[in-house]
Image (cartoon, rainbow, N blue to C red; front, side):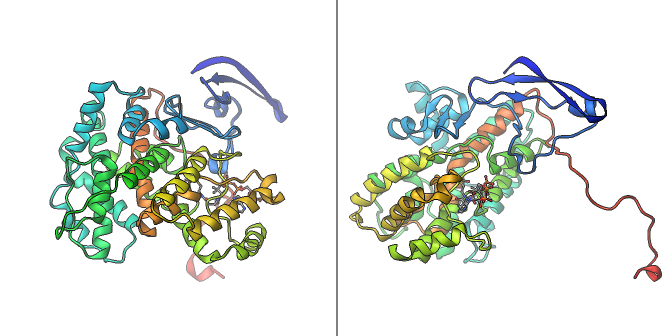
Length: 432
Ligand code: ACO
């Protein structure tokens, strides 16, 4: 980050401020408002952080107008085609693609940390069987601080790395066990001879009763979904992880908070909501009815999987997933999958509609991912859990970056107070 020049603000009552401007490697410059209060006695007001850069980061770059997403400078489309999830995870964590030896060591180290403390299974058993897997994931990940407390000094780089590897390695086990518990089947332990996505599929669908062979087409498709979800700069859940982490809390607590933030339908919960919406639409002829509802200000219904705070163009992840949906469903013999037909028609009609064009609302990552996951036999309730599993890499990388940032401070926004002014206490007998 370099300081290029400054901006001079003047306002009524002799307000004057000189604020530095910083330039990154890509994207808009930022005005540094840290000294604004000292110079003017005013704060900035930005609900939803629509115009606020909360940190500097060298991990992920999004050009929302052009529909470009880069992890450490590499295009998402290229990574989805040529890389795999663990290699991408290494890239996100360490900044560069690994060489052969680094790659093998990373895969080995992640693979050999996939088992959970045996006591964790009793935690699962305390929940109701029909609980949402995201509720279990929040609880179990939060509880990891109680199982792995011996290396929780967040100021110690080695402890931070141990937590990083643990999180990436154990998340598929936690997610798969949340599913197994919900259907009353025995937990399946991780297997070190399987790849990352393969292992997850195996823990989801295998039983102790017979040999289960993971379909390599499905493993590849899931691995690609993991890559596409691995990081997305300062979104709601990542900002949550950073905010919690900024207090010095344990990384497990920070990631648990990130999972909680991801769960909402305006964020990662949208992949589940899309499939439920497509179910509700049911047939192509009902699309106009739902589009009319999405456009009606008096109706809270929104077209799920459409729109994004940053993308004002086609989300590049949705483009990859749309193509992937065609390939995976054809391989699975589901070429005429009715949900995919409805989704494509919905997208076509929406993109021609003035309401969506004017507001630059395009399909986002969640629009096609659920269709692929459903075709793979993954239940709807697990969609957001899978998103959380993949995003763990981004969360933990962003947390590590924050921990090393000398400008990092406890996250603590200010407010515009609009409540009552100071007033004397009213005794009970004098209250109306
Ligand atoms: N359907 C209908 N109208 C929409 C939609 C939608 N999906 N998304 C935005 N709009 C409209 C808004 O009503 C608003 O209209 P107005 O200008 O007439 O008031 C305008 O487009 C701008 O929308 P905002 O809500 O102000 O945009 P914001 O950046 O705050 O919200 C969000 C982005 C939350 C993603 C929103 O587009 C949405 O709710 N989409 C559906 C949920 C979804 O798919 N979420 C997943 C996002 S990707 C992810 O988190 C992984």
